[in-house]
Image (cartoon, rainbow, N blue to C red):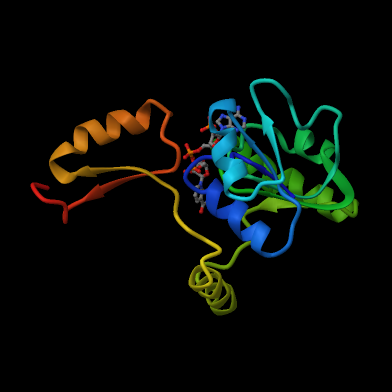
Length: 176
Ligand SMILES: NC(=O)c1ccc[n+]([C@@H]2O[C@H](COP(=O)([O-])OP(=O)(O)OC[C@H]3O[C@@H](n4cnc5c(N)ncnc54)[C@H](OP(=O)(O)O)[C@@H]3O)[C@@H](O)[C@H]2O)c1
């Protein structure tokens, strides 16, 4: 499974869930966050500043595109003939393009492509996540915790793009 955008807010959870379910995981992120993504269990990491996973290279059974910066046709190139591609983020035109072309590609080929095929709070999925969390297989990655009074600094820090995981605002810290 390839996870594009493995180092952001959602990506680290996707990497951990995929690993817990037994997938061989390739994470795509910037070089400065490669070690964090490997630390989450990713077997391989692709630095998007140096390599484009849609051009040559291996083909994947599953692609979860969280960054949403590739077209559905680029994503299709990186899929195995009966692979599954799910887009989770990106611009509105990219999402509508994925809905339209994804449906056609899914009808015309063995590849399945589309936007966010998940059922929010589906009982079986929630139960699985609870089991994985209880077993310590899914943990939030927290970079820094700020006091509520430091909200402005926290947002500025987040905007640098350097945070390695979540930035938390706490109201329970002394002086918050
Ligand atoms: N539909 C939903 O339910 C749902 C839920 C959550 C998120 N989303 C959407 O998913 C998208 C991402 O969310 P997020 O909160 O995880 O974002 P985020 O925290 O900003 O993370 C963005 C991720 O994309 C990576 N990235 C940036 N430029 C890239 C490129 N050129 N190629 C490949 N990867 C690149 C970043 O890597 P580096 O940090 O290493 O640069 C990072 O891993 C957003 O569009 C958001 O709206 C949707």
